[in-house]
Length: 338
Ligand code: TYM
Image 1 (cartoon, helix red, strand yellow):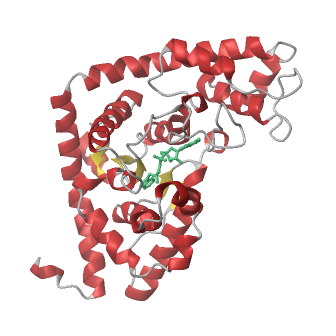
Image 2 (cartoon, protein in one colour):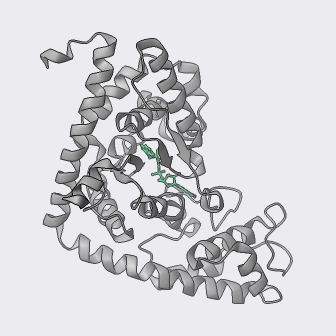
């Protein structure tokens, strides 16, 4: 009873991840690991953003499989479904409903300026869904009155829009939404691609050598780290500007080993790139192994996984509906008749 009481009193913290492409160590360090660590303080709502995934073309079968894969991976990474809520975005209709409402107060120009839209529109086509993507994300966040949203740096612009829409709505219709802020972990907010340290590590990249996937085999991990781009010179030194590739690998080493970047730098000063990379590969193999073991256990028990997602959706629906009705009521909808 005391445990249950404590759980109810905790503030909600929501964040999301798209079920598209291979989940990689950037997703893990930039986002999922924060969610895991914040579970003691908050009631974490970990959302699988399938409505966002379809803003670029998806194969139905692949989307279904990825959605379940992400759910199993979230649990394998340490999201505890007894303390936290894991749910699929499309199972909670309030997300699409609030997004519609927010669309009516979102200036088109702000959406056209979004980096993600500009980056994706040429390859995915200028679809209205892609343009409105950040509005749906604002709805996700505002429905749960979450104060802080743990994300990687690429989501910062979407959080700014969320804040501006919440303020606009509150000013026009009265206090309705809590104004959220991004929770960004400095050193791991933007892991860069292993094959190109000028671009972020990304699951939608054409080359799998760009990232270390959470489900990569030990041999793949060793191979990808071995061929990862390095900088000119021989020195292992943390220099973002002149040695961006080594700086990225140092940050990854630091995050997985728990040692400060400066300590890792000191440890490997005077050694070779090859030696440092070999140790990094073994560190990654060792740290990802328990996640992979737990993943295979979870993925092998589909019934249990589906039950967790069903329970999660029920908990999310109850909270989301309340915020939605409150917002609609303030706008003049006859919500009491619903
Ligand atoms: P998505 O699926 O692209 O990524 C999930 C999370 O991983 C972070 N991330 C990274 N962090 C560090 N380095 C990287 N290279 C890297 N790549 C990705 C992302 O910043 C993100 O936190 N729009 C979101 C999903 C979403 C969401 C939400 C997030 C939908 N609704 C509401 C928060 C709140 C997205 O596409 O994440």
